[in-house]
Length: 116
Image 1 (cartoon, rainbow, N blue to C red):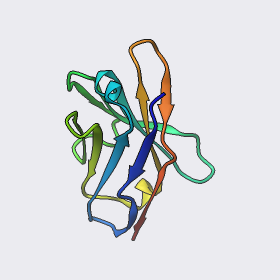
Image 2: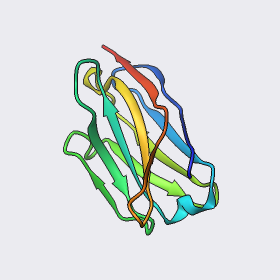
Image 3: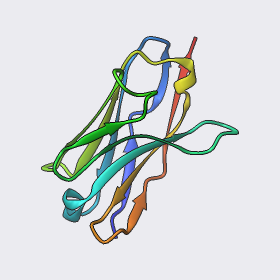
Image 4: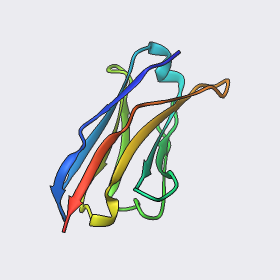
């Protein structure tokens, strides 16, 4: 089982930046795809970005051009760099790690609040 711990959330003004981290407990994380999701109050959880074990990335339209997903396998950590933040980016952000066999693990989430 892989345990994930997100960090880096906080309160930022519109136009600002934050970098979220998703730290894993096991080396097997390096074989896993990683996704970032977010959930705003009253909304369903939505996918934001993904990165494969090989480093290929994909983004939701809302994240393209502003967010960058990356990973450092030596640190067993994935990141979400968020720039030009908007109030509508306010949400709890979660990372998910999916093993090659399909097993998925979630972190506990980190709150991002963007003030206008």
